[in-house]
Image (cartoon, rainbow, N blue to C red; front, side):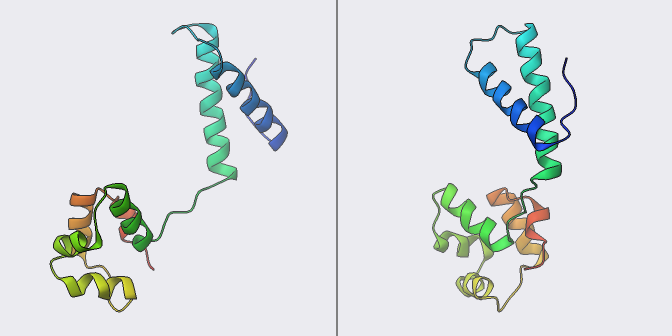
Length: 119
């Protein structure tokens, strides 16, 4: 019987069971595949409540996304419009404008809620 995860011991037990289930070849719509799906949801909810992952700073998100996409900082200058804008933003002399946030969201697909954070 599956139960909500209420403490770290139950969380560790759930993780062990998830690992065990993932090591087998599950048939779709089987009892075990349903158990894995429900356990995964319970583990995820417990982790969200007890082990939240902080959002990255806008600058870290931009750097990470550029690296992910194999783009250079020079290409970021093209996105922002001016070479000096990139260095002003990364040095902290200038904040991202609404137009820059929209462009970064559109081109780099960085969520706007990350880009609008204070930094």
